[in-house]
Length: 281
Image (cartoon, rainbow, N blue to C red; front, side, top):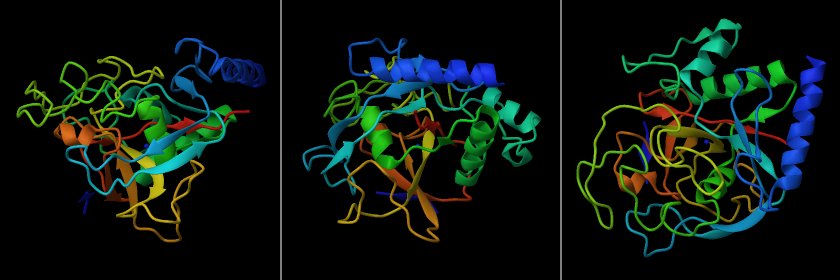
C-alpha cells in the first residue's frame, strides 16, 4: 500500500560532451549547453552542478508531511533526465530484450512522448540497467536528496516556480483551489513530457505528471542516519521505496518540491513513472 505523509566512437563523443558539460556547470552556461544524450533514443540528460541545500520543508509550509529540514551537500555533479522516461524510450528497451519484456499499459492515453506508467520500482531499475549496458555508462535512479536538490534548482519555496503553482505550470489536479494555489484544470491523465515550463536547471515536469521512483528505501521520517552527502538511504530488505514529484491525479500539496510518499517495490499505477540519473566522469 502507498503511504502518503526519482559503439566506441560514440562512447568517446559522449564522454567528451559530458566532460564539457561538467566544466560548464556553475559557470553561467544555459540549460541547453548543459544537456547531452549518450545515444539515439537515449534520454536527454542535464548536468546538475554540485552544491549545498536545505532539504525538507519549514513548519510554515502548507500541506507538509514528514519533511523535517536538514542540510545536505551534493559533493559532485551528476546528470539527471531532462524529462521523465517516455513510452517511446521504454518500448525501445523492451524491443531490445530489456526491461523484463514488460509492455507497459498506456491506459488508452497514447504512448510516444507521454511518460511511461504502470512500471514498478524494479521495472525502473531494469531500464537503468539496460541503459547502462547499451551505453557503457552507469545509469541509475536518483537518490531522494539528488531529486529534491534538482527539483528546487536553487529555490527554497514550496515549488520551483515560487510559493504557489498553477495548472499552467504543471499537470496536477487543480479542480479545487487550496491555500495559495488557485483552482485550475483537472486533465485526468498524463501529458507529453515537456508540456510545461522547465525549472532553473532546465528540467521538465519535476512537479506533477507522474510520481517518480527514487532509489531510496522508504522511511516515515528523516532521521539521524539519513545521508547528508546526497547518497540514497538504503537498508537490507526494505520493502518500500520513495516516490517524488506528485502526479496528474494529485492536488497541489503533493507536487511540492519537498513532498514524498512511499510505495511497495512491486506496486504499479497509472500515475507512477520515473526518470534516470547518471554518474559523470
